[in-house]
Amino acid sequence: MSPMQVDKHHHGQADGHCLVTKDLHEELQRNSEVTVAVAVIRTLTRAIERSTATTVMGLEKDLHVSTEELKKSYPTVISVSAASELFLRFVTRTSALDVSDFRLLKQHLIDRGNQFAEISLAAKAKIAELGERFLHGGCVVMVLGCSSVTLNLLETAASKGKFFTVIVVESKPGTEGLRMYKALERANIQVSMILDAQVAHKLEEVDMVLTGAEAVVESGGIINKIGTYQMALLAGVKGKPVYVAAESYKF
Image (cartoon, rainbow, N blue to C red; front, side):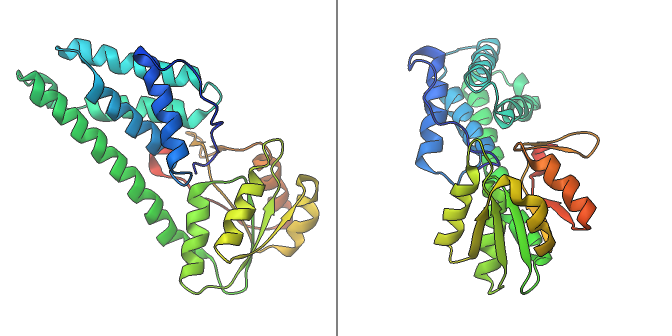
């Protein structure tokens, strides 16, 4: 899933606005391949559907409370906060907010939320389509973490008959690398897993480093799983290219 696997512990209570946390938890449980951002978008769209507000101001208040609840429940997951803020801007940036028929306005916002989710899902497929071209026959790729975008890219390349080998870094303390390793095995992709401490040594054997991202900052740098920075620095020393697979809404 998203770049980083969200802790799927159920935070909060299942009443009032806390339902959004329960919805997000269940959305992630239903589909482990869905990105965190898409899960957040679907969750907030349902929050609009569930709102009993009868005015624009009331609906906006409900939506703001829901986004704050999600951010409070997952304070260390950047993609939850980023997707929540972006969703607010996307669905409310419309002249339809001036529509006098509140029922039509609410449906318009729901439609925009669903449209945003579809755009986000399509981005993952587009990245895979463009990114698999960087993998040449027989290459060795090092990955860190368990980004669903990265995984989809590798699976797409394999489905097109490309042969390559993946070295997965264990990625402690969360051991996301183990999840990536198992997923690649299921896809019949040749894969091995190494300890975090082996990165410098194993970089001698790889042709490229591939990673996902929680967010892309203004300077062009990324925020991602701990260990990404040192891996990129070492790759630079070894002269190995580093590629980041990330959706544009993370900028």
